[in-house]
Image (cartoon, rainbow, N blue to C red; front, side, top):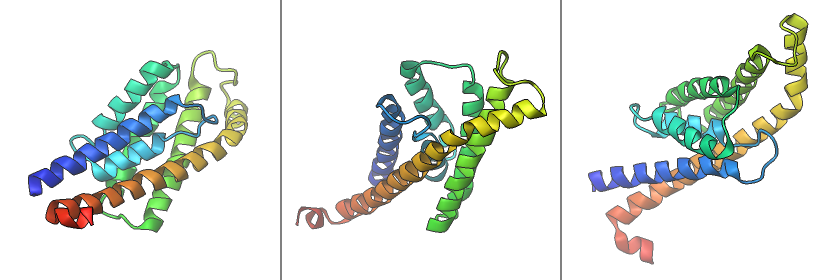
Amino acid sequence: MNSKYSFTKYAAALLLIAVAAFSRMLPHPSNFTPLAAIALFGGVYLDKRFAFVVPILAMLASDYFIGFYGEMYWVYGSFVLIGLIGLWLRNHKKPLLILGGTLASSILFFVVTNFGVWMTPGSIYARNWSGLVECYVAAIPFFRNTLGGDLLFVSVMFGLYELLLVSIKKMLTDPQAVVS
């Protein structure tokens, strides 16, 4: 059962990441995406060897279809940092800590990616303190969507995966219990 369970739980995790990544191609409000959820989920549930690689590959695949963009290095950098929060959450899976990790991820994404927008050559914002402040202020409406998307997608991905783990374990230990 152990190897069967491990294979099944990793297959379920990979499937959730793939579905979340490709959900970015569906119509959605700006910044209401599963980015932070994918990175947190990878850090919490994937083997450490794959905790960053799989989510980044999923992002690259979806960006291939959506289109690459100038600030993507900043997005991917924030994605790696959010993955580190996920690694910490791995040993601290309590609802309030997951909520705190989600909020920290939203703030981190906002700070890093908008700094990147300001730093990108040809930015509409002046390369001085007032330009940086103007950039962050202009991004505040997008932060609401980032936070809402992060809260929703983290809840769905973590909750669904935990339910799947219980079902998989039950199915592998007592197949009749699943049928009845």
